[in-house]
Structures are given as C-alpha cells and as structure tokens.
Length: 575
Image 1 (spheres, rainbow, N blue to C red):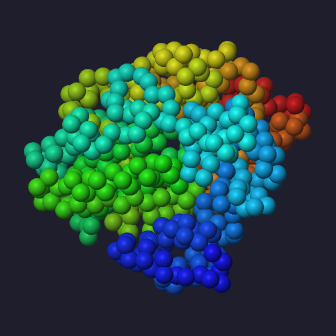
Image 2 (image 1 turned 120 degrees about the horizontal axis):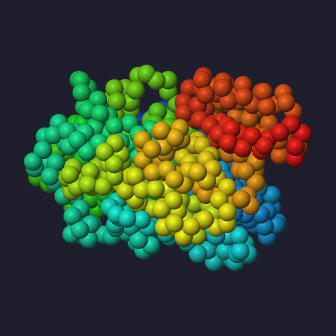
C-alpha cells in the first residue's frame, strides 16, 4: 500500500483489541503497522504517533533503534543470513555471498521484482544448525551444502535440534514435533506446581520453597531467584509485575528457544507461580523478534491457558488473578539486558538504565518487578511440582539441580544438553559424540564469556567449579573450536558483533567496541603495532570499568582471555 492510499482504520481496529492506547503500545503497534502496510512510511509513522499521542520524533527514534523495523520499502521476503561467530566458522559468509549472487543483489537491496531482500544479521541463535538463516518467518539451517536456489524455493524448516543429556527434567517434553497440547501437559503433571502453590502455600511460602531449593538465575548472572522474588514482594507498591526475558540473543545460546517452542506451558506456569509469589496480577513475556515460531506457539498457549482457567481471573478457583501478555522484540541484542527490556516494553528505545535503583523496587512502569529468564521460570515450575528434595537430589550442594547447556561448534552432535550440575565437561562433550578434530579451545558463556584451552575439559560444570578456575559458566554456552580454526577470525567476529550491537548510550562502549574491532582487524591483516596492543588494553580496561551495562563491561572479556591464553595470536606485524 502506497502512502497516498493509507487507510488508518486497520490500526484503530488493532488498537481496539488491545484494550488500551498508552505509550507502551508503541512497539507492538509499529510491528503491526509494518505487517499491514509493508513498511513504516512517513504517513504510517504519523498515524501511529497521533493514535498513541507520541511525538513523531520519538516514534522515529524507536524505529531507527530496532533493526527489524523499516522506514523504507523492502522486499516482500527478507532473507536474514547469520554471520555471527559460529555461523561464520561454518561458512555463513559464503552462504551470504552465494544467496546474493543467486538473487543478483547486494545485502540491503531488494530484487528487481521486490520478491526478496538479503540481510546480513548478527545472530539468529540457531548455532546448532549453523550456518543458518531466517527466510521470512521460516528458520533454515545447515546451508553450507545446499544451493540457495533450492532452499529459497523449497525451505526445509528446522526443528528444535538435538536434545540430549540426563536427567531430562526441563526438556522431558521437548521433542522435534509440535509441543504437547494443554491436555497432555496437564496429564504429565503440568500445572500441579501452580495448583500446589494456590492450594497449600502462601505467597511467602512459595518464596521459601524457591529459597530452600537454592535456585539461581539461569540467564548468566546467577542471582538467587528466591531473593529476587522476596525483594520484589516487599514494601508497598501500587502494583507489581512479572517479566519473562525471552530475548535470547547471545551468540552460542539457543536453550530458551528449545523450551519456548518445546514446552511453552512450563514457561507460563512459572510466570504464574512468580506472580502469585510476589503479588503481581500481570506478566509480560518478551520474546525476541527473530523467534517468530516461538511467538506463535506461546500466543496460542496463552489463549488456551486462559480458556482453561490457568490464566485470568480466579485461577483454579482461587482469588488469584494473573494475565500474561506476549511482547515481541524488534532486533536489538541490548534488550536482553533487563532494564533495556523494560524500556522496550514501555514503548521506548531499548537503552539500559542506570542502577540503582534496581527492577525489584523500580522496574516496569516504575513498579517492583521480578525479571527471570525462560530456563529459570521453567525450573521454578519443576521445583513447585516435584519438591525441593527432589530438585536437590542431583547436582552439587552449591549448584543444585540440572542445567541446560548449548553445545555447538566442532562436535559431532551440536544441540541442547541437560545434565546435573557437577558433570565433568569432558563427559558432556563425549555425550555429544566428542570433538571433531583436535581440540584447540572452548568459548564459555558466549560472546560475553571467555576462551579456555583443552584443560577446561577436566572442570566440573558448576558455578563453584568455574568460579574457582576464574571462568564464566554464564548462561550455559559451550562453543567447541578445533585446531583447524583461526582463533583470530573468531575474535574478529566477536568484536564485530559487539560493535554492531552497542546501543550507543555510553561512550566507553560505543567508541570502545569500534576501536576494539578496528585493532583486531589490523591483527588479522598483519598491520598490528605495539601501540595497537597498548590501545587494546586501554580500551578493554575503560569499557570494563566505566560502561553503563553488562554489554560494555564484558565486550572485551572473550578477546582478552584469548590474548592471555594464546599471546602468540596477536603480535605486531604478524599476519
């Protein structure tokens, strides 16, 4: 539809279904307007701003911030080819060149018939299917051996990927097919945790159970979940919120996608349990825009849960009311940071907030908010259902229970593995079929993590084990790299990722990530100087010490760990 024929009525009809017209509807309305009109023309943006009473300049600012929003015409199907670290290793850059050649375009320009447009993207979190792409809303993978003409015309949608390990607690219901229906979920014990909470525990009692379990956040920070819920529940407040962080976008990470698509009910149940515990009546499930299949699955699950009485008013005959609203991201890695995510839900650019205050006291809309990631909430569901003793029956005293690990790279069977804490890394790698070739390094914790050599295989997979070794367990990323890979290239792709994803709010990160990328590039080209290495040290220190949020604080961590472990990687004048 051209701007001259813009009919704003579909926007008004959509808004009428939302129940409110506040600023927080801005991002959802922009996403819907783009779906309706093809792109966000000046007239569309003006109509959106007028409808929500948001200044046009601010509307433009939001559109320009998110990479999945377009204020220009685009091809009808956008082909997003991933060239993030793992996909680049697997041939993603060649896939990008091949598909551009096949369509006769350069990245960022549509084909002559406007049927396609190709984009190079930072990470799709399909690392276990590398090299991968998103063809419209269809995820496709293992493209290095497939001609673009074939997968563009007949895309074979990939499933959840390989799921292994033992014991399978959180992933027991996850398989390659469609997720179990609501009746099957209930028959297998689903919603028994919520029922136990509502029938036999007070909100404070639920928090006591979570605290006794020793559950720590599975998103990387490992903050005690019970303590977070207790803080969010304390003090006077007009209202409280639960937010599920499903904006999984760390290179090497894909476990939350498996849970969202494979067992959506457990996520919803965990959010409801958290809502009951902290006294919240509303939750927001924020899923990254690059996960369209997960969004479809969860939207359907929310509707069915409402119809069956597991969400809404007087849940299971109690006086507890809880609604969940799904919110889509629109392409911004920074929105995985909890305060940036809150800003995004509120209809703003996803820029991180200064802390303190923290979300548990001043979170969404200025109210106490408990933010947990997908795996944490699914684990809370399991604990309420099966009990603390069962949860702590595996793992270690300081790291009880199981953990999901995203194993990708040079292993025989990349995939999602659920194992008990304390399992030796060597055993996990063996479960995945072993290393393909001679092991050179393992990237732990993703782009914001650290490299380690073959000696890391002897470590137990536990918070305390990795802490003692001075290494990050993070969210569970394990990217295996064999001796045939050039680690300098991997460092380059990591530096490029952060330079691309820095939000620009603080100068140390905005400028530091750019300088870091430029210096690493000179190291690959053989033009590195001793002054460059000194500058790289200065950049790393400055970002770590002065950046506002975790992106800048950790943007140099993996690269600095590689330089420390393998000092010969970057030498002045060496190509």
